[in-house]
Length: 95
Image (tube, rainbow, N blue to C red; front, side, top):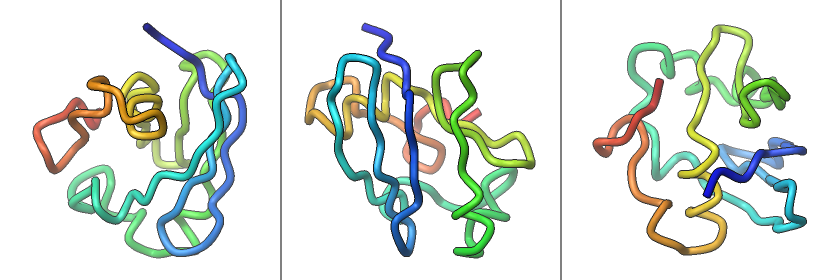
């Protein structure tokens, strides 16, 4: 079901506005999905979190320290489908 993220913007706090290759858009509140440990620890700082970007090769969002998120999980969070299960901190991939 892989749907690449084509646009991402931090819109305050830990909210990400995402757009996928099929035109689906939505907001994900990452505060409820990340434990902010390990590679995700720097994202606790809202100014660092706001440095999110799209990695076209991965088709997902990344940060300067290499933290990235599974695009399938993000798509599931936006659409409410079963792919929305799992992130770092709740048993997901959370590379």
